[in-house]
Image (cartoon, rainbow, N blue to C red):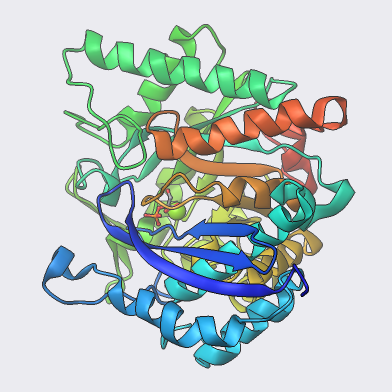
Length: 437
Ligand code: 2PG
Ligand code: MG
């Protein structure tokens, strides 16, 4: 009996960090080895993502996943049995084939991804090696630069502020642990500022501070700079600012305008680009994600022409981890980086291919969690396996976030002197020259 063959596939319902049900899959091999994957879930989802199948019935406010679980146990499991778990590509191809739709809408990307994740963990466990080593081989040794949320807004904070993520990136650290420690200090400093201003310290979906009492979006930028300083660092020297505008959430496609509800302002695309580029002049911003809507290629092009040489411009909803959409971006010279989310595309193999495509075209991959997360750490290993260079998993608080950051710390220790840490050099691959350095 060949130990590496799949003996059973079992899906069950578990829950994510937003108290919504999600899919967990266990794959057991003939030799008893088990691999497990738990599927994450977004809130500000892109229109072009693979389809997350929800029951749409009364239970869990329509968010049940019993259909997806049924699809794994009844339709996918029988066709995965006896497959060689070491051949991730064959497994993922079979999953795609059984579903048969371009966006995984028949069986659900959550059903498919759960199986794909469980299979890769089972493969790694079969060989008794860490997942990053199994997927990436001996060359996988680059630890990611962390992009960490300090304030959460948009769909992750009941739209208390329009902009979704105010984040920091350490730029003067020479190791991951040093960089992450800096971020933790900034997070705690931000908390002190909130407390000092008499604001309640509550947290948004990804662990960032809940933006209570803000009068403008720009206040978030000021608060980040103050927090960096209070923590004893120099903004723009030690840490830069990153923003996820998630602007698809407030784009009016008919009028081609952007609505900032907090400020009661409606901006044309030119004005939106103007506002972002003014912010880049005033604050040490080094990365902007989804500055313009997923439907506004023209606006995205304008933004890239204005800022694409100065800072990182990341496409999340715009690209949805989909090679065909990234190819369009490369051809049009839109953005210079791609947010990578496994469940936007639906299998591990496709996610790795997308990261490779991104790297081969001079764009920077930023491996990312979703706002609905669990203890699953697959993305950490994926980022290191592919030498992606950057990781975004929300804030420095809440265990579904720290599960990932702590996993990087463990891998850093395990890699020892063979670990590489790109620090701010990670941005050079896309030809970005920051103003402030
Ligand atoms: C994003 C993610 C994570 P969500 O927009 O980048 O911050 O959010 O998972 O809700 O799409
Ligand atoms: Mg985003």
